[in-house]
Structure formats: C-alpha cells, structure tokens
Image 1 (cartoon, rainbow, N blue to C red):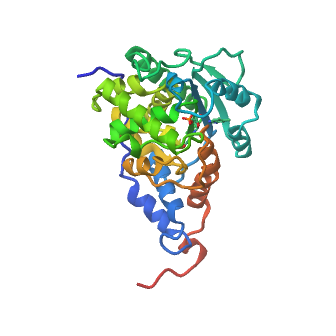
Image 2 (cartoon, rainbow, N blue to C red):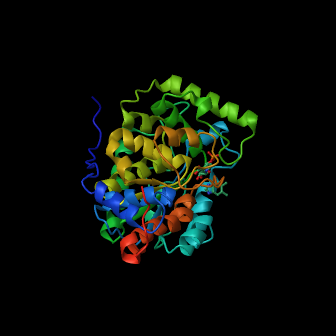
Image 3 (cartoon, rainbow, N blue to C red):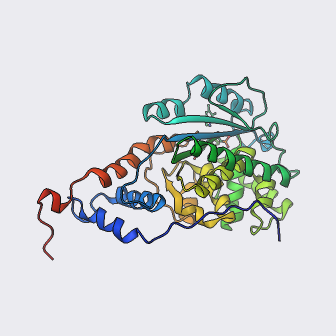
Length: 350
Ligand SMILES: O=C(O)c1ccc[n+]([C@@H]2O[C@H](COP(=O)([O-])O)[C@@H](O)[C@H]2O)c1
Ligand SMILES: Cc1cc2nc[nH]c2cc1C
C-alpha cells in the first residue's frame, strides 16, 4: 500500500435525475433538441442537487510551474516563457485575461513552482513548491513529499475560492514542457504507448514529436512505475502545476463545486486525480477537445463529451473561459424556458 492524502468525494446522488430529465423534457422544444446543452444542464443539476441551479462567482485558476525535462529539448520554447507569461497574466495581457474578462470570470494565477520570484499581486497566489522540477529522465521530477504538499495546497486553495462564493471553477495551466509530463501520465494511467500520447505541444515538428515519444519511453523504463500508486507516478513524471491542479480539482469536488476542465494538460491532471478519487468525474464538464494529438484519446478514456472543438491548443484555461457562456446557457434554459404546459404548446402525439 502507498499512503496518499485522503480525498473524500461523494458520488452525486441520482435521486433527482428523473425529475431533472423530466424538467428538461418539459421545455418547449422537440425532445433532446438542445443536444449537449441538455446533458450539461443535467450534470449541473446533479452536482448542485437542484432543479434550479445557479452559477455563482465563476473563477479560473491557472497553475504555473517549470519543468526540468525542458533541458532534453522537448519544447520549441525556452523555460523562461513560463515566468514571462505569469507576468503577462498579472499585467492582464494574455489570452486568458481577455476571455475571462469578456465572460465575467475571476482569474487567479497560482505559482506552484515557477523558476523565478514574483512581487506580490492581488491575482497571484504564491504556493511555490520548488523552482521547477528535476528532469525526469534522470530522477523523479519531485519527491513524494513535494507531490503530497502540492496536492494538499491545491485542495486548500480551491476550497478558499469556494468559501469566497464560487461554485464553478475553471482549471488551466502554464508550464513550458508540460505536454511531455501530461503525455507520460496518460501513457501510464491509460496503458497506451507514448507515441499515442505525445503531440506537437507548442509546435514541435515530426522529428521533435518522435524524440519526445522516445524520451517518455525512456523515462517510463527508468522509473518502472506502478499505475496503482498515483502519487508515486505524479511525483516521478508530473509537474508542480499539474500536481497542484489535480489537488485543486479534488478539493473542489469535495466541496461539490462544478469543475470546468480545459485542454490536454488539465485533462491529464484530472486523469491522475480520478485515480485517487474516481467520483471526481461526476463533477466535471469537459469544455473542449484541444488540438494536441493525444487529447481525443484521453477524453475517450475519461468518458468525456467535450463541448467545443475549435482547434485551440493554448492551455491557460482558455477553453474553460470560451465555453463558459455555453455552460451559462444550459443553466438559463433550464431555469427560464417555458414548458409545453405553461406556454400552451401541444406536445408530440405518440
Ligand atoms: O491545453 C492544451 O491542450 C495545450 C496543448 C499544447 C500546449 N499547451 C500549452 O503550451 C505549453 C506546453 O507546451 P510544450 O510544447 O512546452 O510542452 C503549456 O504552457 C500549455 O499551457 C496547451
Ligand atoms: C507564448 C506562449 C503562451 C502560452 N500560454 C500557454 N502556454 C504558452 C506557451 C507559449 C510559448
């Protein structure tokens, strides 16, 4: 047995499911005609255990961390971009700032392990575990203790956002090299060869992708990981931001919030979290399928049905912000649409 932090997530009760589905079906539309918005409305009603859900103080949490594996040439961009992009988030100039502002979402930038120091800022949550991970081609990326600490800090900060009034949280990340970590996690937990998990990330060419797969393969051979020990796997090939995001997802689900999942890396964090507490999947909406090659396969493994497929591959939580209006629309139709009865519209005849 491997000790790991205990996360107590309750499965959502299905007692209300029939009544929710009946309310959805009573609306003035052909049966099922709002498609995936209907499935999102059902999910949100189940999470909140009500026929009249509400979305309060939506927030996006962006977890940032650096990766030692970048030294092996797995990303076309230098490690310094992680630090520089956090400054950009704090200055309000990144894509996630634009989309979060557009949709009235609060933004929190979490320094989980960036290689550089930041001045205090109202949007910055300082939670640094270390100044970047080690290259997992030669040693575990972090110690088991650091991994536990990241999970626990993440859970605590998600709970703080929920205590401040949020009941819907988007999860995003920033970390040069983190698609390599995410691919390694996917390979181990899904039992898939690295070639089926890696992709271009920020823009590798074909030779770069092949080299990335070989590096993941080499790392897996080195560490000889046991998928039934999720914390051991996460410590060996994860990242500080991935571990803290996984902890935050677990904490948010413990507090019964709605989780909006972003792209490939966020999905790999959720996959890891689901190995610690499978019930977490009851609380999730998958906002998009990213352009990263392995994401479709990863979403399938999670049984996910993403809302959007726009070829986005940015991370930062941008998928959660772009999809937020759709999530709002599913709540609004459930609360505001007339029923066949209230509007005096004739129902189908069979
Ligand atoms: O969210 C995604 O699906 C996604 C796909 C490709 C790249 N990214 C972002 O790009 C960075 C990782 O890419 P790389 O090539 O450095 O591993 C990291 O900051 C992610 O936020 C994100
Ligand atoms: C510029 C840049 C912005 C990003 N945002 C998330 N990952 C990123 C990677 C790069 C390179």
